[in-house]
Length: 190
View (cartoon, rainbow, N blue to C red):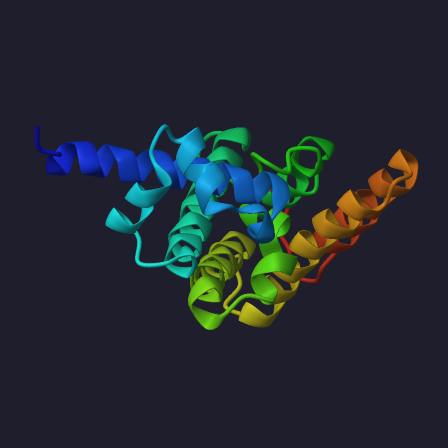
């Protein structure tokens, strides 16, 4: 019996969904092709029918993780076109900090992706630029420098708050970043 293109497509989607979930939870190095294929209900040998290499899989898994994280973040924000302050408050929340495997993949994977090759870094670089564009629009400012700073500060604050083991201090990191970002000159309240 043949393997239809539709079946192959569904299998590839399962592989990518599993890979994206795994790397968001445990990092890029946690990804084992054998374990991944088993968790997707497929054989290890079948992997090469979908991807030329583990590196190619990582590129697509990072993209999948970024899209899923962006979707989850957008669903968690107020409905409509959220403004700058709403975005800052939502991104720098305890809920987001505590949702490493389901929140923003940029914060979950930035350290790992920074050490990866350019092909793996490219999807995240594109998502970061899109986030900067969205923040510049939300700020109502053509000054991309402020938006770039805001994005870097938000991602960095979430990463640092996840590293700190003292819950009170971790909360303080988020609170300080939120306060300073909301006080930026030209940052408008929603």
